[in-house]
Length: 419
Image (cartoon, rainbow, N blue to C red):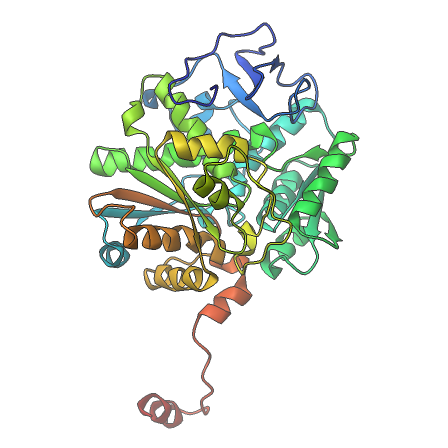
């Protein structure tokens, strides 16, 4: 299996460009990385991964943010808005309440546009410039559109986003709008939007920057590298487990690739690779279904619904990369209710960490797995939170406390507080 932790470093093919090439995860066919626009394998239509002739060690990394890890990426620099270097928060009360030895929150909502998608876009838009394409496009539940619009604007490129009508939080639409994207609201769900944008990309109408694009995931690898470096600095060890929300499964795939490359470089023992643990909402849980049933592929859910809009996805395109990532690391996947997600969102807010609902799914999932005894009390765990609270202000307001009307004088305020 090409996605096995024990896979050897591949031989460099003639198609490589300065030690970088694309390789099919199924048939192994290789392609030059920047000669043509390509998202899947020409021969079998399977997913592609970026490969490197030379894999870096931790000692090779310098600087800050995503481009600290340039030696693990296709270029030395990208179209950047100073993304990455997000906080790895301590949450002592939540740690005690859930009952694990260590719990840290990797808050990707602290990126420039408020989500982890910025990490992928800094690389993806740079690749688009290398390819000389004119228009960038994506389907989105919101965060991808915001990041694409910002980075496309930064790069001086046209951007087109397709959103499921009435299903995207206002904060995310506002970002895409202000950054100058052309926004099309589709009468259908996210998966329908992705079908359309893939067809547009296939016809050469735009360059696709959803996570089907293998270069997007290269930037997202750096989440895993930052988590490992943070744990090594604070505890002199890596986490036992990383828990993360799953929508299109790009982060699961990206982190697994980062860890495989560290194993191949001799920087990480196979036995030390963190258990990748995916969390989905009960109303949109095709990955969980596949893991629970031992299936080799995901069954597309035509109808999905959850208040965690960022993971309201029924056909995760990166499942062929993510399923091996969960299984090979000894991880698992779990579905949680919307009520549990909201409770976790409040718990994080109680620690001063503001996240959108989908982000809180990781903490809700950890709590459920701990209660079921699947996560042990001596584990060191990192939970990934993927988007900022203000991405979905309506959900934040619904989860929070109601404003209380008072008179416009001090005595009236005191009387109300004492009432």
